[in-house]
Image (cartoon, rainbow, N blue to C red; front, side):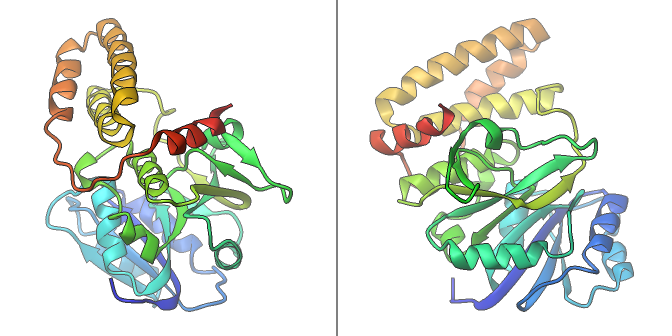
Length: 295
């Protein structure tokens, strides 16, 4: 990728959620930003004309793109990032909005002051007022200024430098759904990145679709498939087998309880068929450093 100008590219991926997208774009009209910025909306092959929502917003710094097929959230975000003009990539879900008009100011300031952190995670709250990105409360390493390093992040609200994003190959689009955030963190750590930085001063209000638990057959399939794939290719070889056995049995118990044994078997089978597009595998020392954030 060519060097980019200083500024912020805000990437929104949407699919068949006109009212959600319209609400999010409305909240961006009053956004303050200390640098040039743009909004990139990626229509992930919706069944309706999402460009009408974008035109109706009246946002002059908005650029709209439509994919020919549904690329899934990770593929859609990659497509949006590939169209970005600026150095800092900010990702926001189409059913989310920043809390406060100065969110982009805070993001820009933090990204400039913390050049070593690979991924900048935002605080994400649900519409009922609860904290949605729960890993940030437990899996963290505090710093003196009240911020902390953390183990996970949610792609519904985060920032990353474009150069580092593409050094990682972006999100693993072959995952299609579920687990792409953890995979990106592990790739970053494998390549020497400092992991995830969390600052609750940048907050996002997000409509939560479900509570994160496996409730439908499709979600269960991708959870089994993608977790087993990530464990296989990202963890050190010997330890990887142990984790695959643990989670294989865990999901087997869930499958029996849910009556989804066939879905479980398909997930296991297909985890072996996902094409690998990189060679990012954690060393044992990097894995242990990442796991310490859980204690």
